[in-house]
Amino acid sequence: MSQDAESAQQNKPIHFMNASLKNIATLLKKDLLLEWRQQYTFFGILIYLASTTFVIYLTMGLPEDKVWNGLYWITLLFICINAVARSFLQEGRGRMLYFYAIVSPVNFIFSKLIFNSLLMCTMSALSLMLFMVLLGNPLTHILLFFGLSCLGGMSLSLVFSFLAAIAAKAQQPSAIMAILGFPLIIPQLLLLMKIANIAFSDIVQNGLPQLVGLLVGFDIMIIALAYILFPFLWKD
Image (cartoon, rainbow, N blue to C red):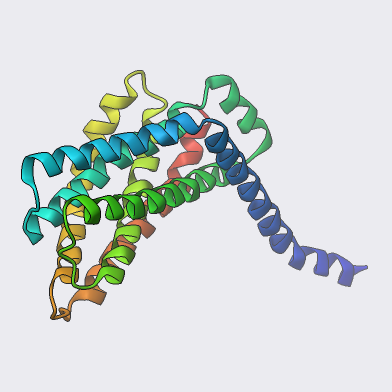
């Protein structure tokens, strides 16, 4: 009897982890289905992306490498604000109360982080394609820049997902996101631009692994903050 109890105690963390993964997968599937049914929001972001890139083309033509790089990340930043902010703002109070009753806050925030990361990976790829078509292709290492753009899009989405969760509890969510977001995002944006400059040169700098490690460490910090702080927001 004691062996059965000990075995059950050892398997308890495994069952808990499996249940958490199942809940995260269910919530992620819910967000994907909502995105599929409300396609006007996704295509609205695509129109915003296409019109922004076209206006840049009309005003600047084919910019030089550093300008191209800076414009790409600034465009991706504002796309992230428009795409990620609505992930929490579209959830009504009644729906949040329903989620509060059936899932844990950690599962809920992790599902949002994963969904927004996937969304920004898609937007990063589409942004890169439009920039290469309209503004030329100054890249020496296209695959490297594509990987960095996906990593950068995920990093931006993690920050703004966490900020959107905080702002959703405020009366002026857009203002709260701007006040909290830009002091946090400017160092990250400068780091992304510095890392991405490597893709424009024939010579690969020695500091690339350290810079990428710094960016990944920042992402891990955001995930840890979401894990620790979101349950307190969830109770409000």
